View 1 (cartoon, rainbow, N blue to C red):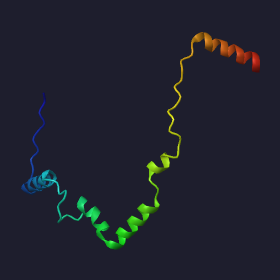
View 2: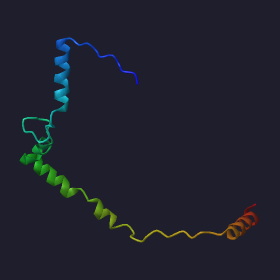
View 3: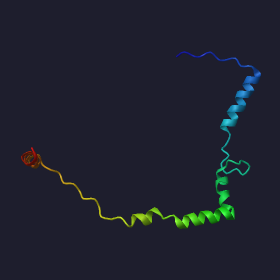
Length: 100
């Protein structure tokens, strides 16, 4: 197996690559309060009383999908029976006599 030639890097390039690698590998900032893009900040807006009132109003006026599905018929779909070759041929002949 052929081995690639090792690249010769300047000291500044090597430090930059190590820094980028460590930034990439460092632990996730999920849940970190110092990070504004944290997932916890997604729910901070609901803590605002004005927004909470709007959310509750919309939730009260929007019908749930479960409620709308109860109005539909709850019967299971009719299972289709297999048709034999003889029955299929008889049906085709009847169709030909009727319409052709």
